[in-house]
Image (cartoon, rainbow, N blue to C red):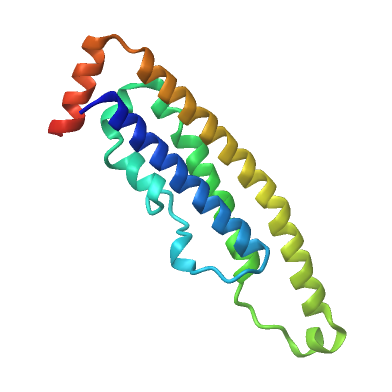
Length: 155
């Protein structure tokens, strides 16, 4: 496997991650989004499938391992956002009469928007660290690259 192919896989993972964040933004903005396309579990998104699957031979690199915590945090924040937007409790009679239900719903949307800011920060960390991983791969000595590539091909 060539370095360019590994770099392309990293860039594809980055692109999938950015698409996921954009779908989360659409969800918060009230646009229709297929909920199946925004998984809550960190191992279910396209980036997570790469990270815990094809990307694992890169796990000997610190820059690769540094992706896991912010990626998991991102999904935890998303789960909070999802709960805020799609909580299934039904409004009580008095909530309907007093309009508290609409106020609570608006407050939850505002909270979701605030948490999205945190989600974007985690996303920025992931994008930065993917860049670091790419630079590290480009700087590895040929012998280490060959060993790493062989693991990617044969594992």
